[in-house]
Image (cartoon, rainbow, N blue to C red; front, side):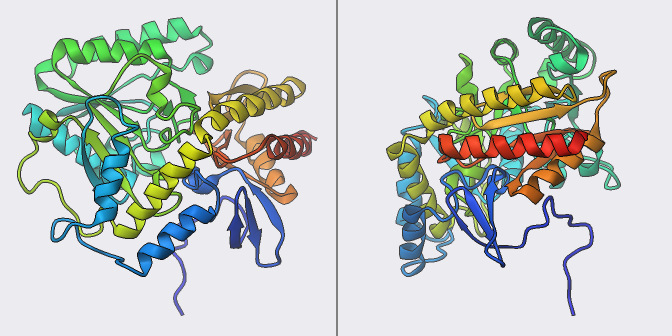
Length: 417
């Protein structure tokens, strides 16, 4: 008898039997508010009727048309449709399956296009688990431990974390940009640096938004030194932060944008986007893959984009995100063990700390478990696992937000009692 790897650990005890909108149901038909969204994937909720119908139609027509062998209409239509929402000038797309693959494709493109080898990443960033993507990741040692040596040519520099350092956001930005400049002066010459890769909001690193001034400072330095700016929008894209792209909270645009997760409502699909001139510098044969741009996933993505537009889910993410954040701050005000509530849109984190400011992993773990017992599914993140994050589907209503807040209040009370 075969079993799953013992290394795989579930974040909740739920054995899901079906999903509907913001809810998951177990095999006993108990209903749970799912504020994990499959780690930010089910953007239109579980089994949205339009996504289901699009996938069903495509399954009956063409399941797999390998896109370097034949082309299929869903991928062409999706590419055209993404042109409506991508930043201006990013008009060429390459599709793969996962965020990790897209991250590696972006680095491959950057290195080939610039003729340089080094990439700068940020402390706390998460970019994936494959070897190249893991080499860019520092959200926690579990991603890198025991598998070295890692890919060479990666240099890390601090991310602006004002709460952890007890300083203002402006001070954190000044310090982080100064350290970036110091890195270019001491570790990786600009002439050797192909790209800098950054998340608009640290994901696994603790749900810490990048201040607009920080992203704008990176853009200015990238332009000055001929370095490409890669924005990892795997988790922040497709409306999650209350803007279609997370970087739109600032005044910048990327050279390469990475998207995945919420793009296809649960079907495996990711992509990188770049301008035609930049994408044209990729070496022949360097882009490909057996399953990338799968016809069913592309059809689901088209339906997802239609639902996001027609149901105004980006606006809903902003509105319900404000409601959720306000409620979380009220809970935190009653429970000092929650030291910080932060995030953008429907991407919010609650950081648990002790009286002297150290990470309080134990209380965060108890609150997370208590929430699941009460019917609210959440996830933890951060290097110490002391941040409880909330990422509901973008269709979440005010009533569902209020219900989640009530359950969260009960869970925190249980955890601290």
